[in-house]
Image (tube, rainbow, N blue to C red; front, side):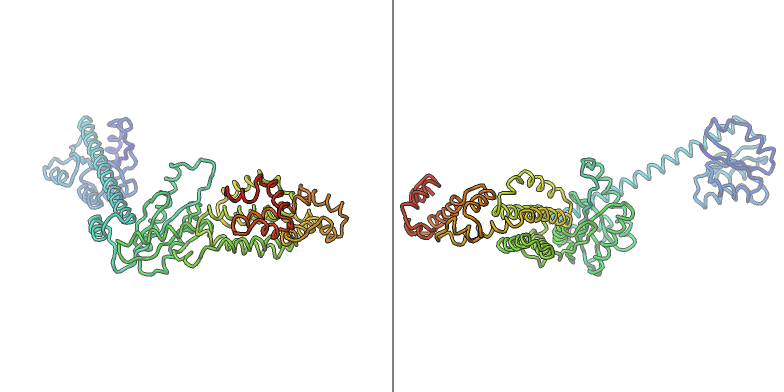
Length: 528
C-alpha cells in the first residue's frame, strides 16, 4: 500500500479528513499526522510518504516551505494543499512548486477523491518512468558489456588489430593504459559433484557468482575486466607491477573460497605491453592452468611453472621401475618409498601438464611390476580384470597427489604379494635370471637343482608349480625367443644362430624351431 501523512494545525480537520474518504479501499495507509510545519517535515523524513495532504498555512513553517524541502531532497512525494484562504497567490505558489491540487475548506469529498486519484496517477506514471529508465540503463550496460566481451574475445583469438580494438574500447569507455602492463588470468573451478547434477545452469550460476566477487575486488584494487571464455573465466588486468599479480590471484582464490566455498585454480599469463599481444598472455595463462592437476586445488600457477621441466626418456623410466621392483623384492620400505617418490617426480615432469599421460604412465608402471612378478611366478595372472578396475579408478581421481596415494597403495599390495611368496619367489628369480644370462650354455635340470641345493625331482615340481610350465620347455622358450631376434635382425647363418642359443646340433635346433613356430628358420625369416 501507498503511505500518506495528513497535516493541519486543527486536529479536528485531521480527524475529519481521515474519515472523509475510504483510504484503505484506495490502497493508501495513513502513517502519520502533524500539526506544525516542522512536525510535518519530521514525519516526511521518518516515513518517506508517497502522499502528503497539508494545510498551506501552519505554525512553524508553511506548506510552501514543506514542498520546497521535498523538491530539494528530490523525493517522489506528491502534495495536496488545503486552506481556508482563497487568495489566488497561494494557489499559484502551490502549483508552481508542483502541488497536485489546491483545495479550499470546507473540503468537498468528491474533489478530494479526484485530487487523490490524480496524485495516484502521477505516482504510477513516475514509477513506470523510473522503471523504464532503469530497464534502459540495464539494457545499455548489458549491451556495452556484451560489446566489450566480444572485442576482448576477438583479441584473445587474435582476430582484430590492436589499434582498432583500442579505438572501439575507448568508445565504450573502457580505457587500457599503454603505460601499464596487461596480463590475462585464466580461472577454472572444481565441480563439487560428479553425479551429473552439475549441468549448464549450475555452471552459469557459479560463473556469475565468481564474476561478481572478482569484479568487486578489481574495483577496489585494480583496473580490469572479467569475461567467460569456454569453460573458464578470463580476467584481464591493467597493472604496473608484475609481482603484484601473484598476490592478487592468491587473494582471489582465498576470497572465492571464503564467500562461495568453491575451489578455484588460476593460471597467470605472461605480462604484455600492447593489446594486440593479449592472445600471447591468454595462451600462456591457459598453458599454466593445464598444470592444475599437478598443483592441486586452490592453486595459483604462473606461466613460468613448467618452463624448466623436460620429458624423461622411456629408458630412464624403465630403470626406475626396475629399481622399484628390487626394493619390493627385498621389502625395504624406506627404499620403496624413495623409489616411488622419484618415479612420481619423473612422471610429473614427462606428463607436461596432461592428466591422461600421468594416469597412463602410472598404469603402465603397475603393469610392468605385475609382469616382473609374473616373471618369477604366475601368481598374478588372475589380476587382469582387477587391473582394468584400477585404471578406471585412476581416471576418476581429481589431482596428482591423490593419484600418487592411490598408486602407492597398489604398489604396496603387490609388495605384500611378493612377500607372501617369500623364499620360493627369490629362489625362482635366481633360476630365471641365470637362464636368461646363460641360455647359450649347457643348462640342465640337475645343474639348476644343485644351484638351489634341491633334489632334481623336487626342483622340477617346484619350478612347474610356480611357472605352470616344465623346466625343459621354459629353457627352450627362452632360447627360441633369442633365436628369433638373431634370425630377424642379423645375417647370421642358421648353424651360427644355433650355436649362439645353446644348440651344438643345427638339425636339432631347426626341428625345435619348427615345433615352436610351425616353420623352419629360413621359412620363418622369408615370411617376415
